[in-house]
Length: 493
Image (cartoon, rainbow, N blue to C red; front, side, top):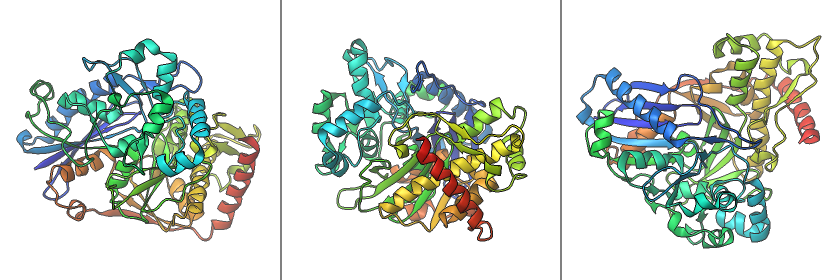
């Protein structure tokens, strides 16, 4: 028996095929091989065509099945992980009305600030658990105000994963976790927030039917099964935003457990069962994948938009011809602190940890007579880690305890500098596992379809690849570099 996981990212679409009996990854693939473009018609905007995501799904699944050489009839379920906070709009014929306004788009920031000020911090932080910010609900309000003809044609709104599930099953559903990441969910009343909808003059009929995260969201139609070379009737039994799903992929489900990721954006994600909100709303709180009434599980999330995308930008524009592993090796030739060069990696939209500031990426103390490519590379990685630590400090003020950070063996966590600097600065042990978003989605589908009876069974063959301990010998140098960086941060942003 097999489980198929899809990860709908803003850089690429990934797929994994998991064998249930022993937890082996039978096949993996991704498309496109270079990062997908993010369309930015104006400063602070970020859009992608949802149909492009679907084209890559249609390309990748047949390739995956062909390379695996398995009996397709033994695929038991499909799970979907997706980039959070994106807004997809379809009409009554389920046709896309405009490009998706994706997670790092900041055009709705002022709309969210106005809602926060009008509804009040007490209501927003106690009931929605967040400021509306530039999340999905505020993006929908932006469309209503600025594109009224498109707004009038909307049948349903969706998150990116809801859209891909719709293409597979012809059904439109969503989840409480998904609605909470859009800041639509009233946690006190345990339903869609009438207060927020009324404030934005939105109808609840735009919201899809709500299903449990681990449940059937429809089955593959005959037409789509024929296109993809799959049997008809396979259930889509799990959908989750990428960060809750990353936590699931690392078996981070209980209060006190911490997950991290450092792809295009970077995230520290901790699970708690009680909330002490950040009054400045710099850190987000959403319903985790296993959140239930009477057994709350909240995901506390500190996000840095400009993480791997900074590394990718340097590779494209400064170190052309070098692989990421070669870039990492070159960065290691420079000492801690990058000889005074500092990078503030906030060039990918409004940064939540900076209260939605959108001032762009900043380089400081660049000296043409001292600094070279190696300094640029190390300073960039240190700037990303320092941004993580800035978010971690906010989370600690909310009562989150940090002893162990779990992460997948991918993206920035393949860099020794990144891992060791983060472990040392946070004073936490980092554990690396052979997992990713698509694998997490596959595991989630098994839980949703009842293939696994419990998370303990699903993760019974989960193996740790590496443990990184804080480097006590380098601790003072790393802390000094961070404190200098933080001082400059407060001057600049």
